[in-house]
Length: 398
Image 1 (cartoon, rainbow, N blue to C red):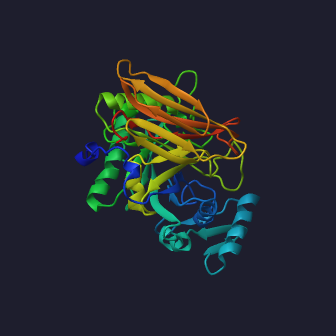
Image 2 (cartoon, rainbow, N blue to C red):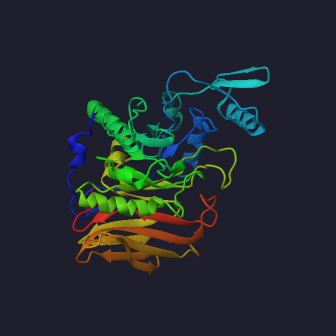
Image 3 (cartoon, rainbow, N blue to C red):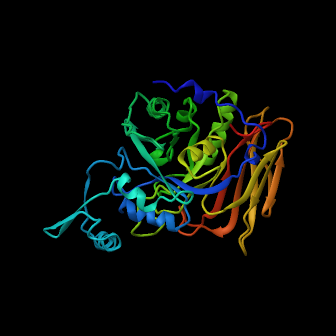
């Protein structure tokens, strides 16, 4: 089923949308992470405990082609780290909570469903779990993965006769469910450069795609491209320019950690905490988070946190939450209508900067780079970085 028309003609917001007469709060969240329900290496309760204790407000556990429902038993790998983790899990949650079988020196554990473990962690206004799935499809040998956020029902991979058709079919399936159930939800393209599965040209063919991962913390994802293929930031600018030409809604860039590994930490592992989003929403509910993200009221980051982002009177202003001993470079990127090539519009050293649209500018987005190295980075030598969402000349990004 093709994407519903309402997603293609979402109304433009008025300037200074984020300064409307309502109280808005920044919420920290991650839309892409894994557990024992698929190929992660930890129990969902231990994972939720980690995120909640590290200042996150919402998490989407997005295992591959499965929801945390029904009965699933996990055979604990016969490695000391996994066996040690089981003992920690058992001690933390008790014999009454953990259903397991220990025979022939191998342990099998019945995994808890989302509805079972959700009450242990959710607190109104403090912590929210949004049901999600990584729809893991492919075309020939190319992996084609999409995140489905706040869904009600499992979505099976839809397949297709090309990479673009596979993506479009899965995208349409998410929004068919949204229309049918009236539950707010959205899809995002996951790690396009993972095994070089999704090209820029593939993404340009889509209708209705609003989000993709500009940063993914998995070590097998080529965020920076290579000598022959573009990195995700270059992809982002070209997607924006192509979308403007075709009168499509702007596409927003997410940062996620895509965590799989919780028992060991290194640049070779896919660990939690590498990338996340900060969403400015009216309340910590799934509907408010989805609404804010579709409005572009969020930024993506690997550690840099912002005091505020304001877009009013054709001026985009950014203020960084200053950390002692850390310096910042704020870069504004955009494109001119006559050339439609991405350019650096302005660069400022400091924790505050702005850019005012000039004649011929089409869009602008900001990238903030700190002088502090990222702890446990995607790639050695990475600095903590943040990306604001693009805004259009004369309108907020929408």
